[in-house]
Image 1 (cartoon, rainbow, N blue to C red):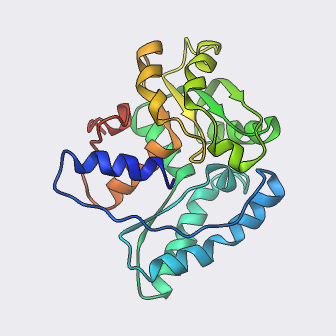
Image 2 (image 1 turned 30 degrees about the vertical axis):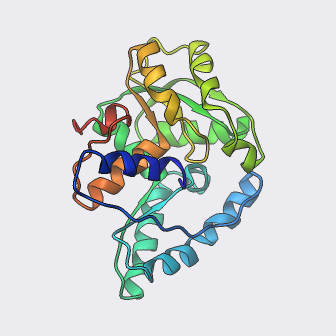
Length: 233
C-alpha cells in the first residue's frame, strides 16, 4: 500500500489537476498466519481513529487476506464498522478495503472466471479462493507462492510473476489477478502480463486505488494501472 498506491496516485497527477497526500497507520503483523491476521484486524479500529484525526477523504484497509480470513462477506462489515469509527470522531471518511475493492473491480470488469496469484501459504490461498468464489466468481487456476514472512512478501521480485503466470492454466480466465495481496509488489509486471496473455490484469493495489478514486469522485484513469484504471470503469 505504501509503495504502489502512492505510485499510482503520482501517475494520476501527471495527467490531472488533482493532488494527493498519503497518510498511514499500521496494524502489526510479522508472519502471515491466520492467528496474526485475526489479531491484526482487531487493531483496525485504532488505525481508523488515528487517520480520521487528519480528516482524510478516504481510507483504504490494505490487507486483503486479513479481511478474507474473517469469513465470507466480511469486507462489508469491516467497512461499515470503520466508517462508524470515523463518524464517532466527528471526522467522517469514506472507507474501502482491498478485499472489497478486488471483488467490486472484478464485477465492474464483467469477469466471471479468473486466475489468481497469491504470496500466501496454501491454506490461506485456499481460503482466499473460497472467499472469491463465494462472491460469484469461478477461479479457474491459482498459485500460492507460500511466503509466510511479511517482509519477504514485500521484497518479492515482481519480474518473477510473468513466468509464474506462463505456467498457469488461464485460457478460460476473463481476468488475471496478478497479486491478490497489496503487500506483494506487482505493478511493474502488469503491462508485461497483459501483453503476454492478451487478458486484462488486476492487482489488489490497482483495485484499491480504483475504489479510492471512485469514493472521492475522481475519474478512474491512471497510466500504467492496467485495464481497471484505463478510465473505462
